Length: 107
Image 1 (cartoon, rainbow, N blue to C red):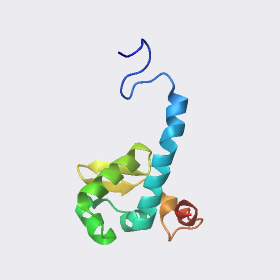
Image 2: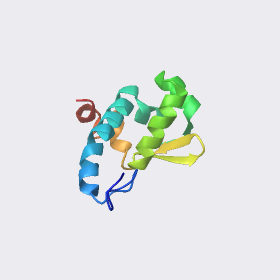
Image 3: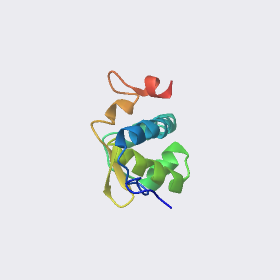
Image 4: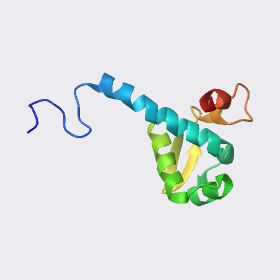
């Protein structure tokens, strides 16, 4: 039986601790996106998950889940169902931009 105020599901009073715990999964998602070249494939355009899956040679369903996870942290934005664009925050993941963060993210 849950203790009062212990938190249920995604509701917890200890958000700082949960943020620390989620840091690993966020970094792994960023690394996966960088290795797949998602930011490069998106460029300055809105693209469908199917198009991105083809360009990155990734499974479309898995890529969709990754893109939604990236949207939660502000790297991508889902403009219409299954269509994404890169945000200004995510733009440094591109390899072709000045001061690209790609090498640091992959490292």
